[in-house]
Length: 187
Image (cartoon, rainbow, N blue to C red; front, top):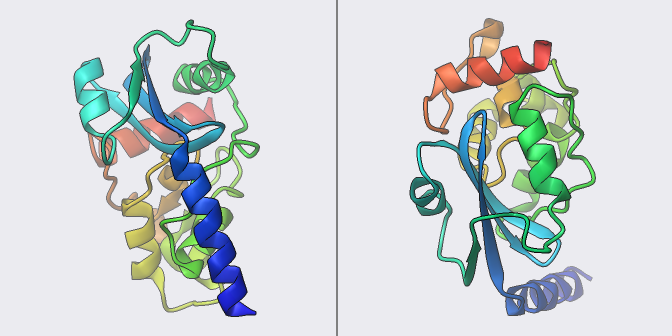
């Protein structure tokens, strides 16, 4: 059974990788963002950059096609939602498909549970680990959040250190950006 499941995942990943990886680059109130997608699946997102070039450079791996203006006919509803989020508007990303193929089962569980954290709320790394069934894995949860390829869509900024301390943040600006995102969600 496990072998069949693993083979099915490999076939799905190969099909997905056959699609070109397109990046859309656009300005927001949080700086330039770059969004990499294979079809409808988001593979990575970078934000908080001073230029389109920096935003693209922050995406892991290369892209096959770059669209600097989302108005080229692509379904840019996600671009509009990300722009709205950056402006402080309440936005729900729970319907956005993201690439999880590079993650272990534990990492996928962390990402999926992180996506359920409501806007304006936070949870500690330890508590998120406990919700994933591994209460002593706070550091592992922190590592998953630090490697998050789709920040904002997977709201890793909502995961904080124990006692309500912010903890680290891997986006440009570090913890100051994390604080800004949390304040945006309070408005």
